[in-house]
Amino acid sequence: MLDRIAGRSSKLSALFAGVEASVPAGAGDLDIRQVACDSRKVQPRALFFALHGAKADGNAFIRDAVSRGAVAIASEDAAPATMPSTVVWIRVTHARKALAITAANFFGHPARELQLVAVTGTNGKTTTTSLVDAIIKASGVKTGLFGTISYHTPLGDYPAPNTTPESVDLQGFLAEIRDAGGRYGVLEASSHSLAMDRLWGCHFAAAVFTNLTREHMDFHKTFEDYFAAKLRLFEGTGAGTPDTAVLNIDDEYGKRLADLAKNAVTYGLNSGAQLTTKKFQLTFSGLSFTAQTLNGKIDIESPLVGRINVYNILAAIGAAQALALPNDVIATGIRNLKNVSGRFQPMAMGQPFLVVVDYAHTGAGAESQRPHHHALRLRRTKGSHQASSHGRSRGEAQRPHDIVQRQSQERRPAENYQRHCGWPAKNARQIHDRARP
View 1 (cartoon, rainbow, N blue to C red):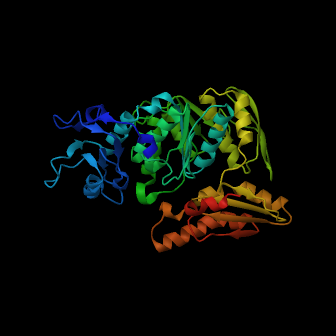
View 2: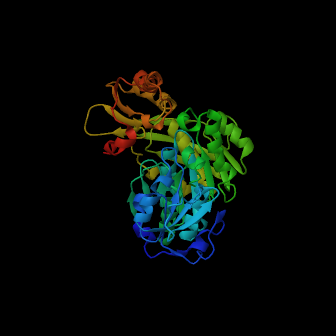
View 3: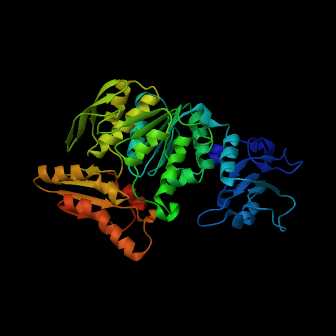
């Protein structure tokens, strides 16, 4: 992040343009050289946002931020009596939206100069975004990719502490893409990020909905709240509704979105979808089918395996066509993506049997691979092995009884359709790098 902010500065008044805030009189000319919401990352002359979080209150870290060089504090709360007079206090109405807008102002609104694609849903986000990224790269244009595995810009890879970056980090990454001559950005839009307005102020050329199954009930409380968070992407995140909504209408909630979203393009394997295929071939080395699209037929050959990846590929085609990328580039990009780390990933290391590593963070995600699991049992006479893991830190169940029941439900699909299964003790979100050959 320090490289992205090096040499940047802005007047306090300019940073709060378009923000519901009370900037003290005479403080508008204050020079700001960083916008931050993590006190540990604060540098001299920073504006620090004290956010109310799910686990901690940023107001508790104001003293630390000031000790590291923060000269201005933004908070929904009133200034404490102990605040030094040398520090400017700005009271904001909606701190997270204010952070997103302020960060965009600081980095010169990079989202306005890029075509952005967001993919949301319970399962399939990582693979679908990876496919869209591969298609864009096949066109010869620089892009960025942000999701569970890592954050990538034309300048390199960065660790991914969250599926979707915090708004100030995201704006910095988008600026990095823009400044490197890139034209696109592709990201996984988690329900947390949408509920917390991390994408506020970003306009999307395409927004994809994959599916919705039970997850994150510790955060959203009800399933309708979970769906409402996903819906935010299609209602518009402070910069207008997406140009195109790409929706899986084989999913019940995808059908609901099709009635609500503007400029919808539907995909699926059942009747009525605008992007579909009549039949497909699954093999151990990949899959193939002819995609029926609004822009004509596309012959697809992909090294990815499993029926679920037919859905992911159709979703990626919809997003790519929304970006006006030609069909031959789409086919090439899909063919170029060899695998996605930990996503039903075959591991060939000389063994006389098939090994598949799969990270599915819900039982539904594992169950979605059922048809290909069944094919493995029917066709692989020497047996197949699956190392599977589920993201237990994502908080679908909290009580010990619920956790045991959930783990049993998660493991059942693999145990039913594989001759041998391995279950790592650790969270796959922490060990996914080990799945890479």
